[in-house]
Length: 272
Image (tube, rainbow, N blue to C red; front, side, top):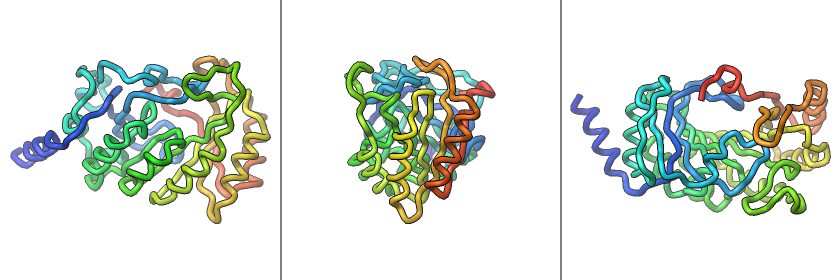
């Protein structure tokens, strides 16, 4: 009991704060580690606007953060932002931190708060769970500050057909993110594991997916590419049909050695 109290006291001594959306325990719902026990630390703020975003409440830093009070119950208490990093670590400990396979630092876009990401990764790393960073894959300078503390970088590869930067609308010309993602990936590969995820919708075009594949194929050992069919949300009303998805996986597999089709499973089973 005294040892546990000492850990809590040490956690509260960590300097700094963050804008937080929520901290909760669940299972990973996306990518190659789907189904594994994961403690999620969701940070607030994002500088992209994805047509299919399922968490628009994270776009702006919020006034209120919520913390699950008991692992897997879906019961939460609230606190005001910004939250002291020590309190975040203590909240993770209260949810049986060491019993999880991963801690996911997610958002929003967590790398808009790189000091918080680095401090949390340092405080929570080496205590059982691997540190998993979920990112839009564009904040290269911020990643360089923290990548040595990250075990898994899970980066999106955004397609201009469905994604705009904050402040731009669908009436503006499409932006290509390929060069920026390639720069980010070069830094991400310093981590022990890198996963690239691309969300595909009915608007996704072969030419932009081919451009992504060409960038990934430049690497001697290209990272795993996860093709994630969109879960209809926001302004996206339907997912691509099975025939389109199978053809797309075959097309990308002809260019890359590791391609997997993995939907969002947490939506199917109804957990956070």
